[in-house]
Image (cartoon, rainbow, N blue to C red; front, top):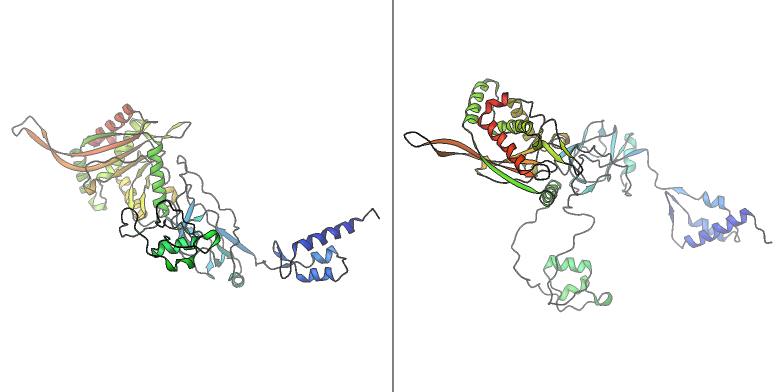
Length: 481
């Protein structure tokens, strides 16, 4: 008959598909279900007649697990691309309450606490402590609601799927930097160092052979490969001799993995120098009046255990200078130049993991005593790695002080998208000419250098801002006006 029923067509199609997709001793998985060999045997023993319905009923669920939540690595800062798990604060099987500290994660800015998103039990830790360069959205752990379901995830393997990680809100004026470099990749080993050979020769070797030769200091010179097309394999290295040094001998040392923080610092500073037209202005500030005011203030506030530093006065003077010359409190945003109302001063703080800039918000309207308290609290949290993202993201102007190390003068790199960073040198006693019997007087001077972005702050404007700063420092009482 030329006409065929729909059922016959369906059976023929299923028969061809099954014959092409199933081989001896092979089980083909379709999603979470598997097709048994006896389906093929049933087909072969049925005289060529195959029913679609019995074929569908041979699927079994092998990958089903109890109800669970896949916890993905979230973006803990707007510029975060990857993270490193420093430690787990909970063990598998532990009871979790919403808000409990689950793990400590190193981001591109600092080490931060990752809180438990849901109440339940920690069934499986996917990424162990020390795992590096974990991408945002990657699965880090499994949470279940029932304690009895924990055992079901003992042998759970990550199939690469995880819930999308929630993204943090972007900073108001900080565009995300390039992704940080990978420190020590786990999934794929880095290419081994090149093995010296005779000049002009090209050596074909397997990746394993290259790695072993690099680790053992062996040379491919004179070796005859037994691999494909004569390539050198690992077993061919038995007759290899030591590698000859090429060029300058390599000095002994230690390779230190690049942390996420250090990688981002390198990227952002390189980006700043390559994309921002820097120029530098240096001026000497007479510090006698500021130092006298500081001494008097600390003596008055001694009972309240408040001590003001020179840096606290500098932060206040910078904020007030920005109110006098608002172009200094601006940011280059590509299509617009944004001038900020409040002055949020980023303070460069050196930590074990690298440089970080916690922010004194509203420094223009805060008193010097409050600024001092804020700086001390932020610096302590920065060195302990406990800063929250909102405490170091943003800022409208930056100060970097190396005076305590005896540095007389230096030039800092602009912290994008800000327009000015002020580099503070040490305060030293100098002799200045005077119309008196001795012919001179002594005074305390401090050298400061402003690094400016020429796109937002022209040279004359930068000079006006720096002049306003010097005037405020040399006449500190005017900060009260």
